[in-house]
Image (cartoon, rainbow, N blue to C red):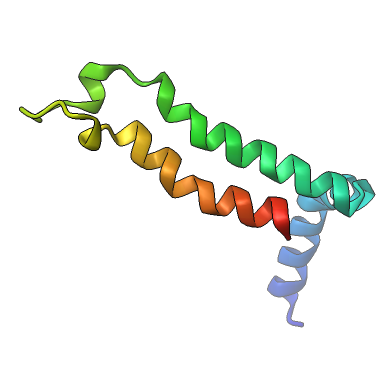
Length: 85
């Protein structure tokens, strides 16, 4: 490894070393449910958006145009995969 690459390695190790130690201490089973929790939060966060923002520029306000529901439907397979495997 050359001099600049070695400095970069030590810089990144100093930044991410403590984070690596924390993540390595979490058991795999608990880590899976933490990830599922984050995915559920990501899936539900669009529900906080207002109707005016969701339907901006759309004359048709039917449920099939509600982007909050589409975001939830898109996230469901990811959540199920992490829960099952």
